[in-house]
Image 1 (tube, one colour):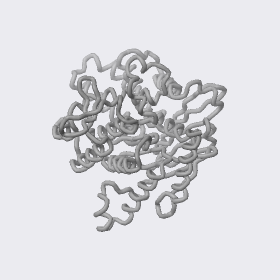
Image 2 (cartoon, helix red, strand yellow):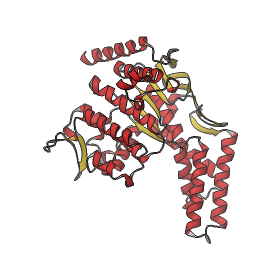
Image 3 (cartoon, one colour):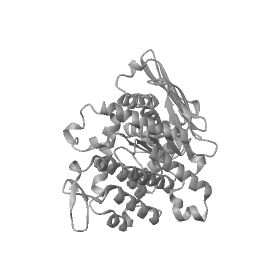
Image 4 (cartoon, one colour):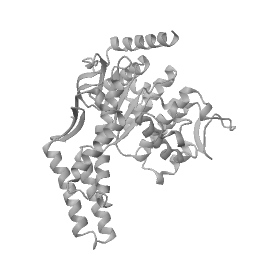
Length: 410
């Protein structure tokens, strides 16, 4: 079981969390929900910084005899890219326990951000860098291309083992509507780093979707489809939420609305369609890859009608179950919380009557669910003994939405 600790960071005073397979955070505005998501993303993406340091060594950029120090600089820079001027936060302490005595601590003392690895993790990182440097200095010159490729594949496997599960982190931020119209020259403007990452991921994925989803998946040789039924269920849900088929072509994003060819271009589509499109496309892309992901989603329900919210949560749970992906979300939607409770209830009953109503691919195991309210600097568990989210918390989520609407109207 992996664990996260946070002390005195932003609005968060003292937080300790066991990382479960399906986690939900609710809470008032500015309580620290999104802060938790960003911290999780940083710790889950540290493997990228190890690969980056390895690339520095291979390319001869890093001549420093202690590349683990360069790695720590990369991690500090990554952290600072998510929080501008972290010195204003004062002294803080963040720690992630990956299991097997492998921990990473990020803390600030006297306005200096520092990184500490546990002894075991530090030694394993040193061993990786030492072995790589020995290979480059003693064997690289005379090695065949096949030997080099095999060596780097083996090195990749060592790096993946550093941080336990071989998962790819994906961050899907709130405010996804910003992805339209801010490509190119606007990308380097003062945007939140999560939005920048999101936009870059969209740019990489968009060319995949040059035809309707059904036609895409028929070309199975291009993808690693593990379960055709799940993929078809996902396509059906995406089309229901979008009210059509998404297609990208000739630098134009469109939703095809009917068989006669009527369509709407994404920049003028509804806010709900814009908010949900690339959330769903990212989820669908993870299914096509067939590997495990750590999926972080901020406010998946934004601007969606309650029925579409239910359909979107069904899609998220379908993806979570597809390859044992982990999902972490923030929400204040009572519809989302009720839908998740229904999925847990179905998973508990597992009877014929339930199976007629809900496909088991949409069930949630009660042991997988972790749900918390974030307020007053701490997190509080809101899952009852029956494994479901407290009805009182569902009602509170509804009250929070009502208060937010009143503020907007005022």
